[in-house]
Amino acid sequence: QSALTQPPSASGSPGQSVTISCTGTSSDVGGYNYVSWYQQHPGKAPKLVISEVSKRPSGVPDRFSGSKSGNTASLTVSGLQAEDEADYYCSSYAGTDTVLFGGGTRLTVL
Amino acid sequence: QVQLQESGPGLVKPSETLSLTCTVSGGSISNSYWSWIRQPPGKALEWIGSILYTGTTNYNPSLKSRVTISLDTSKNQFSLKLNSVTAADTAVYYCAKNRVPGAYWGQGTLVTVSS
Image 1 (cartoon, each protein chain N blue to C red):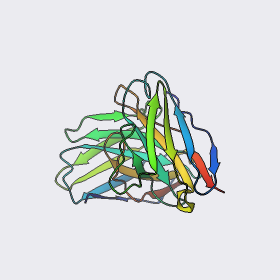
Image 2 (cartoon, rainbow over the protein chains, first blue to last red):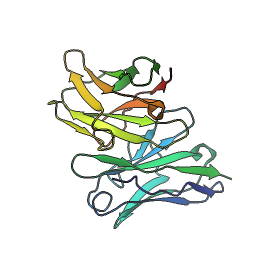
Image 3 (cartoon, rainbow over the protein chains, first blue to last red):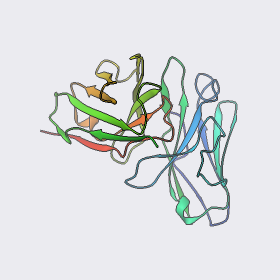
Image 4 (cartoon, one colour):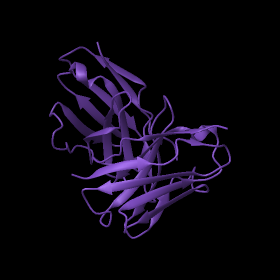
């Protein structure tokens, strides 16, 4: 099993939209609708922002949205704000009762 | 509101066993999957394994030979043991609810492997 592939970095100016990808295989991302996204600020525990590909937990701004096409899932952050600057990780159920995480993407708000 | 709290030694010697406990409050441990995840300094999250309330366990294949996850329903706790540790096991260890971790995570605890 290999980690899911994320770009190491992404950036955007305040008010813009940024999309972060998470690429796996048909055995994980492509095979199940159990992709989650987490936001992690320095020194803090990860915070769930998207579950089951596109479900937004209560309290998460609707600026955060998720989608999936084939073996690639995506997280879009619209109307970027300074507080969105953080590391973002994807995870996916990978069959045989295992879970994979992505390598993480550092989002910079310019 | 479910809350999780990790506890255990912050320093473990090489070749010894790392032991951590996660205490769950605000809800019963007897109705879900519970997971351990770790994050080496400056690196990505890594799923270690999960345990269902029935006691069924699943582990990361890369760690399977060294990991044991167990639960104590009487104390509403679940535990992690990782044996034969090396410096590569130095990380912040998190416990979380659900097999694919959801909204409920512990704050994390740093475990350093060093003599």
